[in-house]
Image (cartoon, rainbow, N blue to C red; front, side):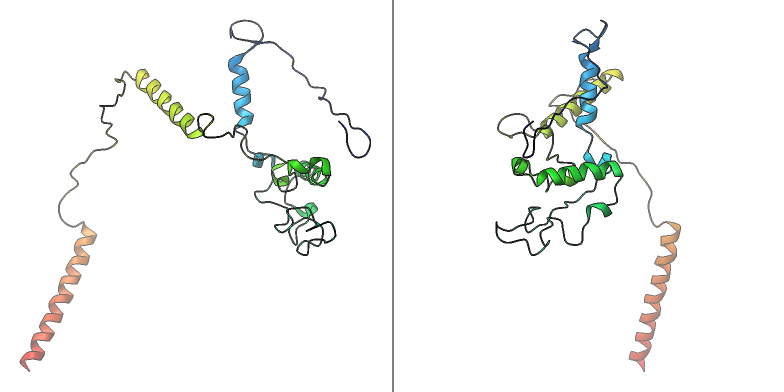
Length: 212
């Protein structure tokens, strides 16, 4: 991997699990269902689960660059690129998360990684957006997928309980009315009687004033 200073070598760790992915879950090896479950686990796992913070660290004026131009430093962050008063070493995160944030911040200053915008997204460990973000005109939206999944689960539940399937002409009743009673509750009756007595007393006083 070429860099500004020398050359870096990136490689996998020592813990490797290399197995063929098989379509038959009964055969020896790793089934496609297990792989899908593993991917879904980490695809739906947010960066906040790693102990990061929920707001950006970069200066809003220079967007983490530290400079407004080649000749002028940012007057808001004074060239640090961080929000005023913010220090990476003072973030309320674990040491592991701090190292990852610091790595994103340091790499974001390199010109070869400028397009990755690592500094504005250092609080998310360099990750921008959803892993499956795509154009609405290109494919299904996540809302469409959620609707299809909910409909599929509903059909499964109705089949398990022996209920008929729903169609366009089916009216789904989510609740029903029942008779609760007539009149006041005991507490409301006391308040109503108190109001009646006050109104009656006020009318009597007004009548006596007119007679006098």
